[in-house]
Structure formats: C-alpha cells, structure tokens
Image (tube, rainbow, N blue to C red):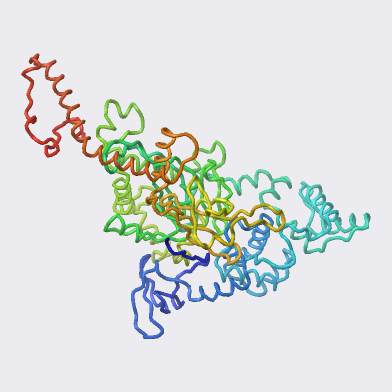
Length: 634
C-alpha cells in the first residue's frame, strides 16, 4: 500500500523584492536583482555567491517559523475552508474591512485616527494587521480561542434587538443621522427597558459592517450607489495586472478523437481566464465534462500557479510567465460560479468574486472576445464544427476529426504562448505580453506595481480549490462514488461520533478528478491532509471520466451495487475493446470506403459489379495507407 503523505496547509504568500530574503532549495538568499517574471538574482548568505533563482521555487524565509507557531496557536490559516464557521467568516470579513485602509502603509497618527473613526482600539488594529501580514491571507485574522463557541452572542439579545432596530429604522434613512445619534438612541432605549446597553465600540462596529452600497441606497442616494458600484461595461478597465480577471466557459468548436481508436468522441469544454489590464490569458482548464464548480476551481488554481511544469509536460519551447493571486474575479451568474466552496476558496486567498449583473451582456466583453478569437483559430483545424450549421454547411466534422484531447490541449497552449500573447492587440497597440511586463516592471515613465503575491505552497492552492466531500469513516475506510479508500491513518477514526450531536462524525475529503486513485483526508485535530489510496490496489489508475465510462458499462450489464471485481473486469473490457477496435478500425473503415467508392463508380461508369477494381485484395490491409479524399483537410 502506498505510504501516507502528510501536507500541512500553508496559505502564506511571498512577494520577491530587492534586499528581501528568500528560501531556495533549502538555502537562504538575499535578492539583489529582479530579472523578469521567471528569474531573480540572489546572493547565498553562506557562500556569498550570486545565482539565478527560479521564481517558482522561491519561498518566504519565515514560512517554517510561521508554520511552527501556527501548530501551537492553531489559527485558521491551516484549517480547511469548510471547517470555518459562518460566524468566523463574518468576523474575518469585519477585521479585514477594518484594516483595509491601512494595508498599504500608514503612520501611527493615521492608524490612531482610523481607530477612532471605526471604534476599534489602535493596538487591536496593529494586532490584526500583524496577523494578516504574517500569513498573507485573511484567515490569519482570526485565531480560534478557547472559551467562546462559534456563533456565541457577545451582548444581551434584547440589547442586540434594540441596536438593530435603531440602525434599520433610524440610521439607514434619508435623514442620515450620525453614528453618535444612533449610540445615544440605543442607550436611551436600553435605559427605558432597564437593559445593559452595548458599548460605544460595539454599536460603531455594527454600523461599520453596513456596506457603503447599502448605506448610500438606504439613505436616499440610490443613483450615487448605482454609479459608484455598478459596472460600466463600455469603460471597463483595470489599473494594473491581476487587478481584475474574467472567467467563462465554452464548448470548443472541434470534434476530438479517442487516443487509441481515433474514433470521434465529441467536443471538449474549455474554461478561460483573462487579465483585463494586459489581455494575457492567465489560466485555463480543458475538460470532457460540462462546466462545473470543479472546472472553475481548477482554472483559478492554474491561473495562480507558475506554468513552467505544464510547458515541460507538453514539450513547448515558449514562456508563460504569468502567476500570482488576482484581486477580483468577474464571472457570469451560473451555478458553477456561485457555490459556497468556490466563494470561500476565493475569499480565503483574498480574491473578490463578483458576478455579472443580470441582463448586462457587455459586462464580460473581454472574455467573450477572447473566446471568439480562440474559436476563430479553431475553425481552421480539421474536425471543426464551426460556430453554427450555416457556417459548417456540408463539412463532415466527424470525418475530418484527427486531434486527440491531449493533442488539442497542446495546440491550445502553443497558440496561447507563441501567438496570442506575442502579437499586437488592437485595443492595447502592443502585445499582451508587453503590456503585462509594463504593468509589472514599469515603462520608463510610470512605475510598475512589482511582482504579484506568489503562493508559498502550490499544493495548498490546489487543495483549497478541489471539490470537497463530507464522509463518515467505516471499517472499510471511506466510500466516494462507489470507490473505497483506506489507510491506517483512518483506523482510530472508524465510526467516531461527534461529542455534541452523538451522531457519526463526518470528515473532509478532497479529490482531483484527473486522478481518482487517491483522495486527500483532512485531519481537523492536527490540521493536516493525508493522502489516502484506493483500498483495492488492483483497480487501475483512472481519471473521473474513465471511471464513469466503466460504471456506465456495468449499469448496462448488471443491476444493483457494483463490486471492485466487476469494476476491474469492466475496465479491462474497455481496454480490450480499444485494442480490438484499434486492430479492426482500419479494416472496417476500408471496407466501408471500398463499398462507397464501388457504388459511386457504378453510378458513373455503369461497370458491372464483377469487373469492379480490387487492387488491394492480395495484400495485408493493415500495411496499406487509406487513400480517401474525404478525410483530408479541406
């Protein structure tokens, strides 16, 4: 059985800067020069030798120290997203809103002034600010504390009721009273009912939690709120790279073929992410499944992480030096974008998820134009479906199809990195790659914003965005979609019950659809993930699509539950079908084509059937190429 692997979540980030220190392959370096999006120059503090350092391998020097302290204090930076309660999320958001105006630098005088305005002591602001900066994530704002249960009300319920009534019936009105007026009203009303009033700070906190949009709208400034906060698509811009990224899906206008048989298997789907500032494509996800939360999540994680390994995988001699955590993601209103798991995964990394207003077709204009550009290129490929029936006319998409899934993916990545990123964009009057570099490094007139935040652990990004399952642990491990996963690390948790509800306790598991031979198990006590393999190691490695095909075959033959033995046999049968089809396909298609040619010849020449040409009958047909004009590219 595969040994258990442990992974502790590390959501800290690192921004390479001159004179900062970084870890690189276990050594500590001082960064002396920023070369490009791929490399920096660093001096080894032990040897004093300068070296070129790949940015993708840089980590913050203090990452281990932060991690060690985190294990003792158990802050939420190491917690799985779904473990964080709604009340904790609200508190995280409240604290983040409080420190936002001072994140980019502020004097002590500025901080003290800000603290008075929001009713939070300046030492508390310093503590929150330190927690956020030490982790680089919003979850660093809220350590779990003993003695207070999640959701516990801090003030007396009757006082809370009075406070909310005063805010909604007096403060959020066209009269627009001051916060001090609300404080006085709450205290007067509490005194009348002999209730201990909330503190001034608590009342101010409640008021500060009201969004500016709601405040403007309720206080008679509806048009101002709409102008300030509603997007204006025709002027939709960004000020720097990764400020805003748009994401959307589309079926690719091409029929792909099976890897082995080369039979047509339909159209794949692609999810694309574009940086509004530079028009760089920051990420993608190609799939045989229809769009889902998983498609979005894997596209986002692909966007955030460096892409060097992906270029090596496809053997593409180019660069795609785009990485970093974006500020805002703009999407449409589809259910695949509105899942709680995606929202929280974005939120935990400081990404603002915004949705296209209903009936605002131009809101996603940039991503729609990108999709149009990519599809126009695809229309030149054999097997294209074009955009509609009128364009396709009599073109036989299935007959001309020749790209496999992997071949198409390599073509797409090649087009993105070697053509789209490097050619002049009409709106920018320069290439997206030039615009991206200009935004990062400056252009000689205006300074760039510098490197974006680089995740300290790529595994954490992937885990945070993977689909999640809540499951109890049984004697045979955990079951997900009919597959059992087991490792000895699960043994102490078999049939464990929740102390409060006395019901069997559910645990968090995550799975990558591209490889379902294992799942990740989250241990909420030590806040770490363990890699749990399939209990039956005889089951061959599969992705989710292959597994679903095997299950479909079994459902057609059997009723009731599906055993591991049946699954293994079904997978073997599918592979045998591929082998058989691979041998027969050429002969079958050749015989069909011979019959077709024969009929056409007969109609044209009226040659009797007995005299029809049989040029290849004496040869091994597997060795003869197919001479068929109808399958050539037109």
